[in-house]
Length: 91
Image (cartoon, rainbow, N blue to C red; front, side, top):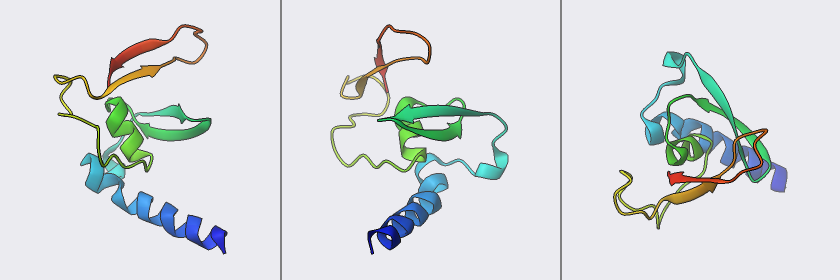
């Protein structure tokens, strides 16, 4: 039974990608791979961290701030593959 629920959620996440990001997949030329909590996702290059997570199917309902990097609510820690150092940025 849970397998069906996951399948439905995957379909919902897939159908919302262009709505959330304003990007139609057929117009995307360059893709990058991001990793969120050990899972990898292919997302269009050039998105902000928050937009990339939304494209991957994550939804932000609170604490995402102004979405422009002014208020600091979207401050995040990330790491680039092959680099041991942590980096910070506005998502």
